[in-house]
Structures are given as structure tokens and as C-alpha cells.
Length: 220
Length: 115
Image 1 (cartoon, rainbow over the protein chains, first blue to last red):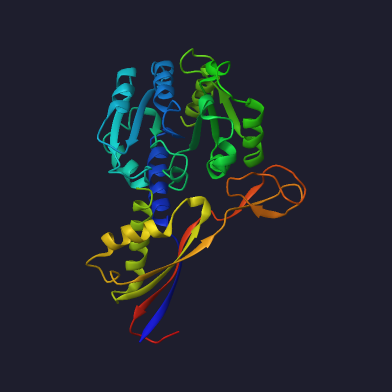
Image 2 (image 1 turned 180 degrees about the horizontal axis):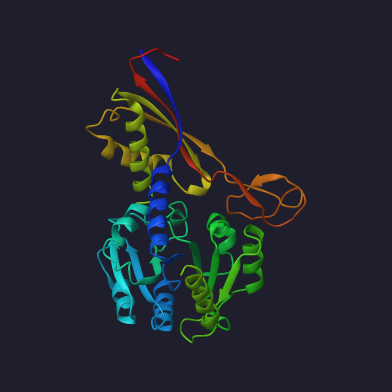
């Protein structure tokens, strides 16, 4: 004999609940948190370094970095730039989960922080499914990856709150049609805020950091 | 190890709903946009469920294609990465309409009245 138990439960509902806990903790401390997602090599760590350098005098910044290995290079780079950084070894998982962020919060000086930047694992597929409790999900694209990314990873582009297009200094050297890229973004996520930057030359970074400052101010 | 986290989450849900009874079957819906693959979930399942009441459970997957709803004409069409144009009116893109989620739909456990 057997019986059927109806379940109908979203597999990630438990993760969502932990993400809500993380969000409540961040809000209690007045911290603005951005979850930075991108493919490997798009410039997540570079953008964090430039951001920390630009904002650290006005606001204490925390950084959580997820990697599939124990190599903590990225957290070290952020630390050198002036952030309080925590490295998470995901043990092979190709995304961060809310519980990992919750545990990492315990290692950060939350009372001091105004901004928390989470560097997700480089991947354009599953990080979008796993909410972390961040106030903004930010996708970093880069010109050498090609202008077809919104068309190939529609879910990522449909689900984020901000797109940062990095490496615009390489536009003369790579096949990248900005209009095609932005048409794809607009088709999936109308009115999505986007920034065009070069972490190498600094071009466009002021608009990005000005936006972050606004978000930080709004939470004081 | 794309499916490790999701398989852990599936097992948690199954064990919570099993009421301690041995689980025979688990039915899971996998949305295309999640990028999860049944065969890979199965591999992690064998490892993770060992020693639990769900270790002998058969996993059944229902695949749900990724779709967009055209903002211009309302047509729901497949969005599997080959293009974002509405086949009806040619408008680009749309609202995500289906295939975004992964859910545990039901489980079958030993004992009790068959329903």
C-alpha cells in the first residue's frame, strides 16, 4: 500500500526564506547590498575594486566573494582596495546560496558598514535562481563576451535590476554592437537601468558610483 | 556542480513531507530556464539520499519549456535561447511566462490509504 502526498512546493522556497532573513538584517543595520553576477572574466572584482576606491572615504564597505575553490584572490584584491572582505568557498557549487551569505554576515562588522557588495560565482545561469537578500541584483556584462548575451541568457537579463556593461574601452577592437545588446536588454527588461563603464580607464564609473551613493543615502 | 544545491533542496522538502514513511516516488517539475538537468539531479540524489527514507525513491521529472508572453500581442512563445522574436507579430522579447521554476509536485510514500 502506498499513498500520495501532494506537495507543490517551490524547491527554492527555503532559500527564499533565508534570503528574507538576510534582507531584514541588512535593513536593520541600514546597509545597501548589491549582488553582482557575471560570467567569469567580465570584471566583477575589478568593478568592486574601483567602486571601493571611489566610495571608501564616505562609507565603510563590506564584500563577500563566492568562488568554487579555496583561492581567495578576489577577496584579497577587495581587501587591498579597502573593503572588509569575506571569502566563501562554495565547495564546487556554481552559485552562492542565501545561507552562505547569512553565515558570512557574522564575519563582517555590520554596525560600521553602509554598503555590502556580493561577488557571486562567475556564471550566467543559476545565480539568478538563488536569491541572496540583496536590494539590487546587478549583472555585469563585458564587450568581449559579445552582444548576444541577452538573447542567450534571457532569464538572467529578465531578472536583474541593473546592468553594467564593462570594458567599453575595447569597443574599437571587438565585435560588439551596443544597439543590438541594448535592444535585447530592453526586450526582456523594459526601462532597465544600465551603465557603460571601463574599469581600466575609469570611463563611466562616476555614474555607477553616484547611483550607489544614492542607494546608500536612501537607507540612512 | 550545477545541480548539487537544488538536489539538497529537493531532498529537504521530500523528507519534510514524508512523515518518516519510506518514499517510493518523487515528482519534480523542472523549468527550462533553471538550466537543471534530471540526469544530474539523479546522480546527486543517489549520494545525498543514502541512509534516508527517500533512498529508494524513484525520481520523475516533468519538463516545462521556457516561454515569454509578447508585450505587443500577448502570444506565448518558446524562449530557449534561439531568438526572442514573437512568431506571431515579430515584436522582440516579452514577459517571462513559464519555465522559470523548479517545484516538488508530489511524493508517494509507503503505507496509508492510496489516493
